[in-house]
Length: 181
Image (cartoon, rainbow, N blue to C red):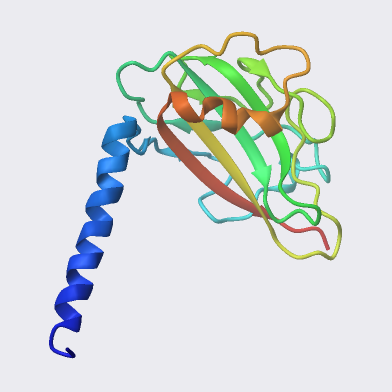
């Protein structure tokens, strides 16, 4: 019996992988590829300068990205802080960024802004509670196969990622940090 156990485990593990693969193929949902997302203001995992926070001018940092896949009709952008004390806090969201755009300049507004968790459209920078340690700000860009219809007015950043999930061709992410002492 002990001699058969490794063989049985190998067969069981192999069948789990093929079942998962079969499910992905059946649903037609392949995981999205990756877009390179960068900023001149900060590097991956590095601090976001105070200029782009509530302690500075609260302007959005410049970001740029690589070529998207064929079939991209628009982009969506989300910036959130999963380290917020009450759960993920969304600082910026915008949809229907034209597919020809490859960057957003400092303080620039592109596309249709969504309502952030401050209750306003557009960008509101990092502003974690003082003395609460380092927070991580995730800048996430989605290349979409559609322009999102009916997105205006009171559309919330909190709903944006769910809305774009089925339309994402590729995705990029850049993480910056900020801490208030």
